[in-house]
Length: 309
Image 1 (cartoon, one colour):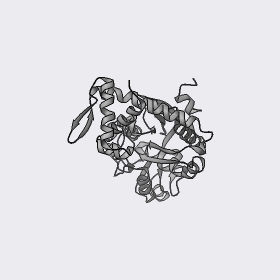
Image 2 (image 1 turned 120 degrees about the vertical axis):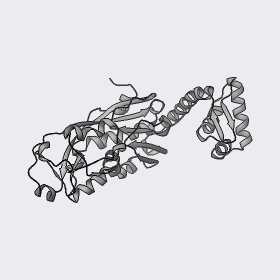
Image 3 (image 1 turned 120 degrees about the horizontal axis):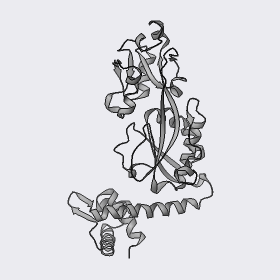
Image 4 (image 1 turned 135 degrees about the vertical axis):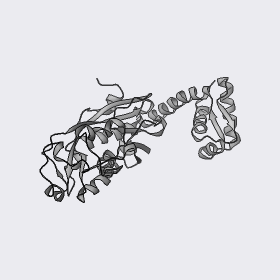
């Protein structure tokens, strides 16, 4: 019979890849951990790990069992968290992966609110514009700028926004009025480094200005803003960021406002965790109060759990 204790030890070995590392994390003797794994393999009637000097890796049977072990772990954690009365009692950590602008200018500015609302939780904020290679074991929540196609992940559209042109007043004074792409020098743009965005998002500038040849390419919005503030060119920014950035003006004569969206992702086995629900609620509040961001899905947590249509 497979026991929950054995599954918990199995998870640690699978995640750390070494018996000794798992034992250290669990506070157990490595021989004890080894006995639990052997007992689990006897119950499963299959080898679960390849044992090599370089580390332990999952067999195909172990990979199949991993899905069930993670589901059991999530159910236990959800049951424990659901017994807590308020968000102030939540402990542990939440790993949130977001694109550059969303993480830096929205989540980053809300750190104080996160601390006040969830004082027992720690937040791990990771900036990543491209999510194609992420494993669901690497995050609790993620925000993407392109709708992902991923297994074992629940996805909802969180917000809509627009990309618009911005420049320093000195740059605009030094150039003729801009009313179309023909009024802009091809090399007057500041944009992303080619491999720092997914292809559909990277192409937004070139759909608006097909002849654009960015003179400065930077992989962060903060860097693009700094270059634009120095009068080095035009930055194609989310309007909710560009409109409130000192030293920049929106180029209202340029007719191309490109619509974009943010998508919220949560691994299926984590959608019911109280700490994930609480963090999701905070993100929803951040978006709703931000001018230029238009909240698409209300009660995001319930939507992710499939409790609302």
